[in-house]
Amino acid sequence: MAHGRELWDFALVDPELNKVSNDGMECTARITIKALISEYKHGFDCIGSLVDVGGDTGASIAEIVKAYPHIKGTNFDLPHVVATAPPCPGVNHIGGDMFSNILTTDAIFLKCALDAGIANIIQARNYLIMLSQIANDVASSPSLDITHLSRLMRFLVHKKLFDTTNPQSDSNSKAETLYSLNHCSKWLLRDPQQLSLAPFLCLLQYHRTI
Image (cartoon, rainbow, N blue to C red; front, top):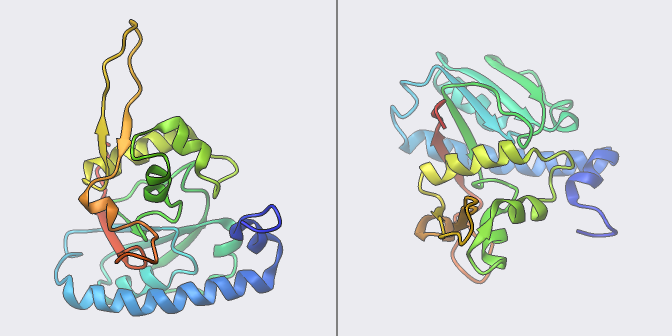
């Protein structure tokens, strides 16, 4: 944060910064996605539809659909980001907020295991944190829907990116679930002093029951 604003807030009102940010992410995405496709052989064969959540201008989903043309691709990012996205064959650009809604699809694609930095938020709170505390610390969404955040966290826990603890409550009310890091989520920390997988891509199979 600088001058009282997050990067994404500046990009919203500054077209030049928005372009610089989008160009940088697109460059990184093309490098990493090509490496993923070359090694993750047949991993997309059973997927009919795929949404890239926080997909920027669509570079990643475009490469996937190019390699697997049977996939119906959707690039999902903030409205001012997808407004500058170039047309991509087989890809539909949709503007929205991942903390308010994610489209129904066979699978979702998350880069950097959430740009919201949830792993770092949990670490900063000494590893045990309630959903309400995560919501307070997520600054990337001005209209965060805590119900959707809860669904998103259940999804990430289901995929073993985070752990949960349900402490005993002294009252009749149900104790709130506490979220913590595990061996997988520790790799997602943005820590320049330690080896991190945060710049890379994470593919998570989407289950409609979550």
